[in-house]
Amino acid sequence: MASPRRARSLVAAVVSFMAVAGVVANLGAVPGTASSHREAPLIGDDPKADNTDVWAFVSPDRPGTITIIGSWIPFEEPAGGPNFYPFADDTAYDFNIDNDGDARPDWIYRWVFSSRFRNPDTFLYNTGQVTALRDPDLNFRQTYDLYRINVDRGRQVKLLDDRPVVPSRVGDASMPDYESLFEAGVHAFDKARSWAGQSDDAFFLDLRVFDLLYGADLSEVGDDTLKGFNVNTIALQVPATRIAKGGNPTKNPVVGIWSSTSRRSTRVLNMNGTRDESGKYVQVSRLGSPLVNEVVIPVGKKDRFNASKPKDDAQFASFVLDPEVPKLIEAIYGIPAPATPRNDLVQAFLTGVPGLNQPDRVQASEMLRLNMSIKPRDCPAFNRLGVIDGDICGFPNGRRLADDVVDIALRVMEGDLTDGNPTSSSVALGDGVDENDYPFRSTFPYVALPTSGSDAGVHTP
Image 1 (cartoon, rainbow, N blue to C red):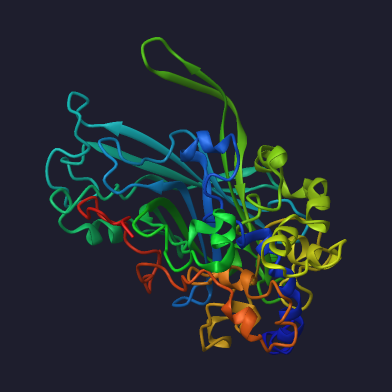
Image 2 (cartoon, one colour):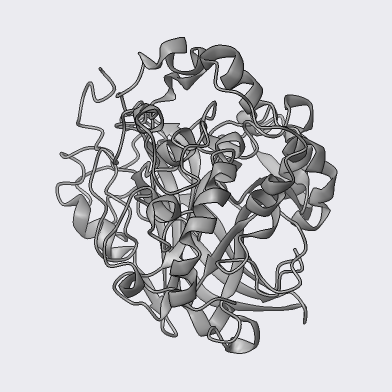
């Protein structure tokens, strides 16, 4: 595995690779949604289980730790009461970690939520001002248990018990100091931290991509169409030694990370309005690299992808070798599609980049891959375009919150970045949205506060 210094020398090669990741534009961003927001038919009917995004990066303020962030429940309207946006009860929300490249999880961190009403005889989410997470005026209360699962040994340890979730941001009258509630949601355990609650949707892009790829002439760009929408988010900060193979992130620095959601196999709707769930957990949603299921996997296979495991990703190889998106780009913009089969894409999508974030003896499988030995100090100048512009701490080496996945993809579509010198035509490609609507926080959990229900008209252009 490459050292940070050698990894820098590989940037030119990785730039060439990102002409491939421009097809992780394929894999991603050109005709994509806000990452995995409602990307498949079945999961569109189950938003509480819908993984929208995953990020994984070396913590900027605690470089000995790794931060993993995942979001669920797309397009939360801030004023969407009276029930607002809880996580699903008795459902497994998982961060999966493969530390040896065999496409199977070695460690799973699992959050399981429980909900209750203090007073079921009112319609109110809160019956007065809420000033603490356990405030009696918070009528709807949700808590979680956090488990760490050693998959190889079949052992499960409960790390946190009955910890409060940060509630939805009802409005300023109900929650006058929401930031204090947000910060109180950080729960420490054994040199690690967990947080769960509502946040601003950290993904940023112009979703008018669906109108024939930004109006067929790039005229429909520049509007962050996720501005003002919230999501539910889970964040974990854990020492690198806890997830590296053999506990040694120096010797074994690369990990693969993806999130998944699993429901009980049987759900019974009762005549009295209650619901019973039983049986084993069954995976219903999965997300690793951004913008994959939406545009690489055809609609007839999307539900299968959500239910599948990375170890079985060979079944989707044909869609990687002959992707649809470059053909659409060629038809609309006249940019020639690269020749197929796209064997180079296999490296981007399934194995990681040699010398940067490819594990030894890797089995091809889709997930975020992060080289934990490359620290923020190795990349003193942040660049939203990540690896393609010389910032090897960014996507596709993991994914930071501020990485501009859409522009990374669009700017390499013409293949002009292979020598590290983009042409004017490639620089012109972009959705016109270069950063999130709210600044990210400098400390864990890093995501921005959610938009308040008091803020009317936040979606108006």
